[in-house]
Image (cartoon, rainbow, N blue to C red; front, side, top):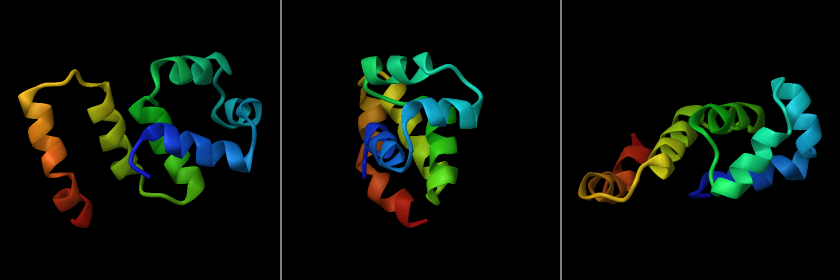
Length: 87
């Protein structure tokens, strides 16, 4: 998995969006907004990761990078993703 929406789909295999909304004490519209944007916020990504037994820091970093506009600096970070994932 390399995108937060893949993490979201994995979460939806466990329980539906309404159940996750109750678990996180948020409105289901937060998930509609995430689908519309094609990404999760770092906070949602981190919390889904915790619930799914994944590394929250990893998913929060991916979510933060997804939120950024394309730039040379972002490309530089993306080129180093494999290196920081091993750390």
